[in-house]
Image 1 (cartoon, rainbow, N blue to C red):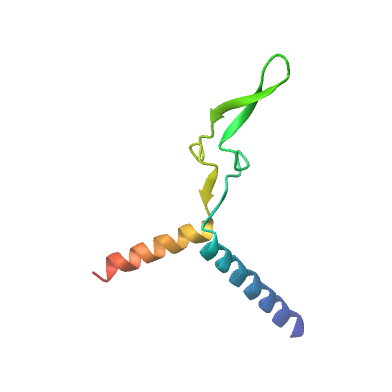
Image 2: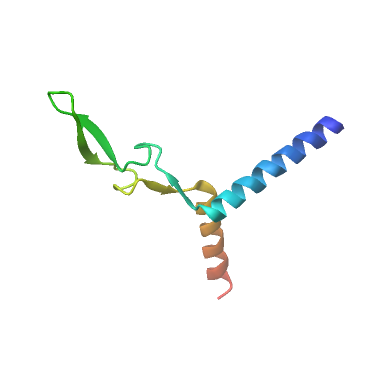
Amino acid sequence: MALSFLASACLLVVTFCYGVRCWLQPFGPCRKCDGMGHALTYDRKGKPKRGKDCRRCHGHGIRIRVGRHLWNVWTRTRRAGTR
């Protein structure tokens, strides 16, 4: 009984913290380019130079978090349904 209560409380705390994070920072760094917005390429001398823009974030370096995306979909659906 105590173990299931502890697991439920831990899951509730993690969910609440993620919700607060999505509310305060709706965008996170892109996972493909690590927030740089582009890939690094190297020339023949070994010096790094800017490569092509990231296709996932279109060169911005940020992406919308999954929780924020779900929140936006839910509010858009609710707003369209109550008109």
